[in-house]
Image (cartoon, rainbow, N blue to C red; front, top):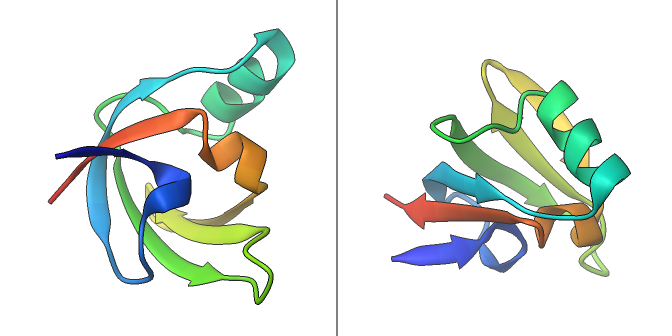
Length: 76
């Protein structure tokens, strides 16, 4: 089942299928290693839901909710 990264629950793991977004946001995500085929694990969500912290390619990455909405992943 495919979901937006912003819809993941804490503890869920998935494989990134696609990265959307407009120009600068999309480029920034790619530069941080958010690319198709990467395994992503949702570690934490802030109390108000923004930002979210994920583990990706062996490091922790904090994303704004708007950035996480641009990432589509297949839930494992």
